[in-house]
Length: 385
Image (cartoon, rainbow, N blue to C red; front, top):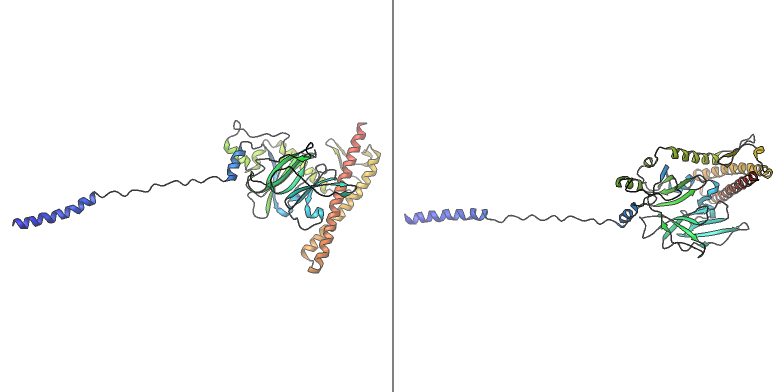
């Protein structure tokens, strides 16, 4: 009997041991979650560095266009010079994305070729040999030059290790002592971004500026912003604007945020509209015209001119504008035929014809600008006497 009880006690003990061991089993330790630290990109770091110096700019308008057509939407007055494509100006086919800028006098040209910038001068009706523009610094793919009317301040776009990404817009000034340009500086926000930003141009006569960007745009499209350039640099300050507002303005999220009461924008749009209409307006058949001498003086008849020579110049100008209109019509017809009807055998000859028309067209446009400037200058000089 004692032996039987002993066996029962041993069996009970064996049942208790596993339960006790289960209770004493060490808890499973949870793995610690290590947060993943994402380092900001070089472009993001540069953006933060530039944010505090974001310029206050009023953007009066914007338009999204095809990249290959964007130069057609720069409405510069003759006093601001002229921008064109490299292939059109030089009658070439090997530089489809390079641009050319010719000053208001038509005697000096800045252009890009294979990622470098050059300048040429017109002497006795002929362009000189190209000279490289030196002293700007280390850049890749330099393009889209534009010179202010002072002949010293150069804007261009390029890629740099110190940029925000893609093409950035830079500015340099010519140093007459060294005969070279100074090291170029990034013009900062809001003009530059991590995308491609380029073709900065200022029409000082109208107080209108332009630049193009592919930020937030689909492939093959660019946005052209029109803005009012400041006489001196004005930046957003933390005392007057919160950080969210400054970031939004730096990225140009909404141009309407920059309009204020809208008066300055309305005035700028009026100036811009006047420029567009003046470029498109054909000569009146009855001989009347509209000729802007300055902001306060507009002539509509030959008898309005005080300088007698200007009356003869206006006759010449009228003929030139008529030829210009006819040439434009021929050019448009040739382009349309080439694009829709020309067969393979016709295309080579037609291409040469179009290039010839384009060269004649842009030369005539420049001649008209120069004659208008001469008339304007001589008339104002006569009025001063």
